[in-house]
Image (cartoon, rainbow, N blue to C red; front, side):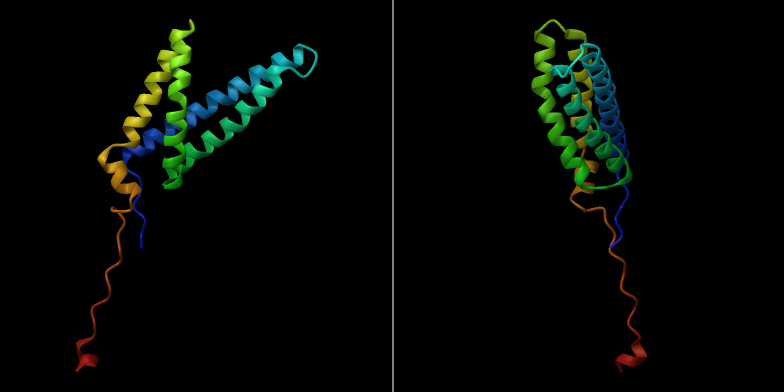
Length: 141
């Protein structure tokens, strides 16, 4: 069976996932430097470590989705659903601009993951089964 390439909507969703992962890696770096400047192990280093792990995972999933790995769609979907409460928290605690920007990206990725072409690809309905070679009629007689 030949696996069909992902539709353009999934490639865009994968790129957005990878950008979210890069954003987490940048945040992890900033938090780690702030933690080191504080002169010891504090919450910044711990949260920065978690952000680094999540950033690597999200970037990997985004790249894999662009390359056509079906598992990456599920991973991206779960992460986006987990980000909905984060967006709500950011928008209601005085960081509305960041929350709104993240919310737009989350909604965009969710919409791209649920386009009909994306769902059809994820279910494997676009895959091609190679045709069987025609039977040799001379041998059949």
